[in-house]
Image (cartoon, rainbow, N blue to C red; front, side):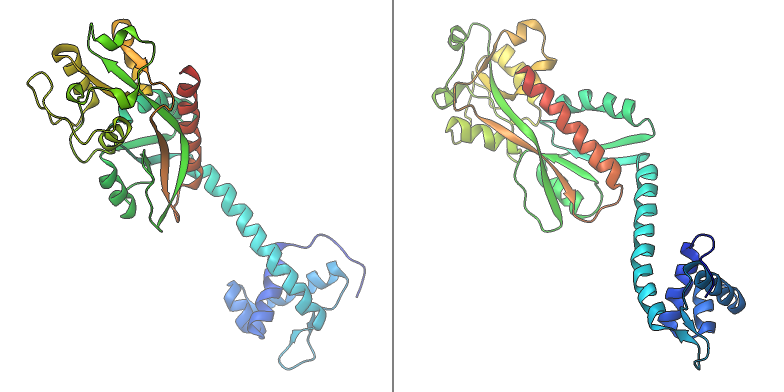
Length: 309
């Protein structure tokens, strides 16, 4: 063969791999959607550029030489790497736009989303958030059905179809009625809270179960002659304001309070009760770039709350 000339192209390598796979010039050309003369000409140019004989044209039918077969094996790796490179770059460019379908539990959504949404809008202006606010069991079912890209929860959920990412730890705080006797203390003991003054969310909310576990209670009775089955922490806070008693809130809720309300918040003495916040993501999912970016932004937001604690 003559001296090497010019550069080897991916197209030429693809033609060589096709010849090895099909063992026939015509079938190889058809698989590459080119004419047989085009494939043959490009293989000759490849040989010239490598300075080596890759095709035994004296054979019937013509086939790759032993060296040609070895070059084809190396070419497969290069072609696969090229496809992965292009796919990754394309996915990265295309994924940071369009909707991300997000599920959030009700005890997290009112506090995390107002801080997180502006960040998403500023960093990725072409990304839109479609938010579903539901209890954990509803979110996990939607995730299993493929109706959500990410679910933000506060329990350790197990399912072979998804993986969990820890976003951070959020402590609970105690919110007390005006003039409550516990206000004279800087911290309160969760295990010593009066259960007959405790306002709780209704059954079905993981936050209710976490509060009961933290306080060693088995449920809430009447508080000031009132029993309430609420699905919103804001309602419990207003009941504390007007009917007395106390409730537990996630630490992030304090950021939305006014000065008078904050004055009635007390942290817990160690060991401080709280919850671990997690992002659930299906193991096989599209929009990888935007999902990973969103999870990172959520973790950053939660970390800022932790530092402010």
